[in-house]
Structures are given as C-alpha cells and as structure tokens.
Image 1 (cartoon, helix red, strand yellow):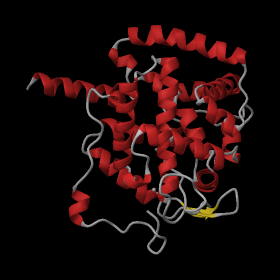
Image 2: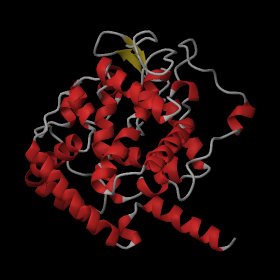
Image 3: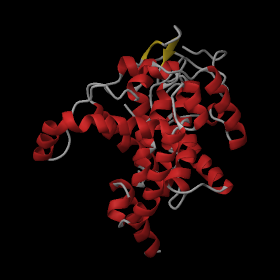
Image 4: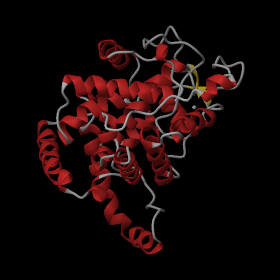
Amino acid sequence: MSSAKDVKGPRARGPEAAPGGGADPEPPSGQGADPEPPARARDAYPEPPPPGGVLWSLSGDIRALLMLPAALTLQVAHPAVGAGVDEHSVFRTDPWGRGERSLRSLQLWVYGGAEAAEEGRRLRVLHRTIQGTDTRGRRYHALTPANYAWVHATGFPVYQHAARYLIRPMTPAQERALYAEWLQVGRILGIHDRDMPQSIEEFWPYWKRMLAAEIEATTVVRELVDVDQPVPPPDRGPWPLRMLLRALWPVLLPPLARFRRFVTIGLMPPDARAAVGLPWSAEQEKRLRRMCAVLRVVVPALPERLRYLPRARAARAAHRTAVSNG
C-alpha cells in the first residue's frame, strides 16, 4: 500500500488506504488514525453544501446517474482502493444493493441537512476494519488520509467534465464554487483540509501526479468495464417487475453492459481515461455527443418529479417552503 512517501498527493500521512466512494471509512487504534474526536468536536458537525449551489442543482439531477460509473471506476483504479473493494466489497454478489446504498449516501451528503455529518461518521466506522495488501504488494488500511482523499477527489473532475456533455460547460466561477462545495462534502466525510488541495490551482497538479504515479487498470476496473461480466438481475422493486426482469435478463444484460461501459469510459476525463488505459474512438465520441445533446434538450423539459431524484426533490421543495415562509 502507498506510504506517505509513496503517494504524491497532498500531504500524505497516516496508515494506508481506502475503499469508499459513497459505499459501505477509522482504522483500529494503533493503526495511525485520528483518535475519536472529543465530544465538543463531534458536536461541531460540518454543514452540507448550500441550497441553490452548484452541487444542489447537479447531484440530484437524473443525468448525474450517468456520471457515477466514471467516478466509481476512477476510485478503484487506485491500487489500494481497488484491492480494498476487490477483497471486502459485496459489489459482485449484491451490486444493486450496493448501488442503492451508495446513491443514498451521496444524496445525504448534499441534501441530508443534519443527517449529512452522521452519514459521514457512519461511513468511517464501516471502514475501520478494512485492511490488506494492495495490487503493488504494499500494506493498506481503508482510512489512510491520502487515499481516502483520492476516493473523494475523483468526484470533482468527473462532475466538471461530464457536465460539459450532459448539462452545459461550467464558467470558471461555477467550477470554483463546485470545488469549494466538494471540499465541504469532504469535511462531512471526515477528510481534513490538510489532506485535500484547497484550491483548483492546487488540485490540478495533484490530479496529474496521481494519474502519473498511482492509477492503473486494477482487477476491479477491468470488471467494471467488462461487457461479459455476470451481473444478477435487479432484486429491488415490485415483485411482478422483478420477475419480469429476471425472465428477460439474458436479453437485457448484454446491451445494458455495453451501455455501462460506454458511459463509464466516455464520461471519464480524457487524461484519466488514458492513465487507466481505456480505449475510446472518434466514432464513440460522436455517439456520446449525440446522446448527450438529446438529454440536454429532453431532461430540462421534464417535470420536477421526473427530473430530480427523490431526496433532491424533497429537499428542493422543503427549501422553497422555508424561503416562502421567510
């Protein structure tokens, strides 16, 4: 696993490494983690991103669902994170449940209000016992600050890049606001400011160093973009729908797997795509742009109940009510 001297991220320190990313992280005592904070510090919960901010509009939009596979794949392209997910995650046996929990967690960070910080603490507790050896033979622990920060950091460049296709290019001011809000989400997750670049000017050199020194096509990356990887049929939703999907799954899975690979690679920033070694052609780029052009027209025309995910929709409605009531 990457030690402080191995990882060329921001002020790398601490034990070792981190599967995270809104899925099912505090290492056991003696592992080099920060001790449990005193009661006064625990009560000072960081606030979630502000209503009306960039994340408020972006992460609850149904188009954001298409951005998540690229971010998750980049997370597990880190040797430690990939090893942690490979060895400890249930993504192979319970992909739908893991996806549902990950999405719920991500929505809580942005729209959860008082629940956001509690969710961050829950995730850290879940990762306390995760440790092992990474793909390069280095010891890791799930909550090494430098590697846990990488899991979080991947969200910003994916949001920034994918929004150009699916929504609109961000202005420099919007990019700065997005990064500031993403840092705030990091605080909710327990990431110290010293472990994340504190500005965009600091972020991009850090990003390039990580792509050059750490990122690789791990076993989990290869599985996530493999169109022949077995995936069980969905086990959520009404019983008749589950039965129908189970019956049709042999027909539905191949095109869905190809689509997953297409959006995973296509919405990944090009420099990250190259660092991982994922192929992408000019023809695929044209297809992606055509698809996204349609979504840019269709999705904004949808009623709010269809355009936004349930928690985002509820938070937006509650905020409007609070504003109207003064």
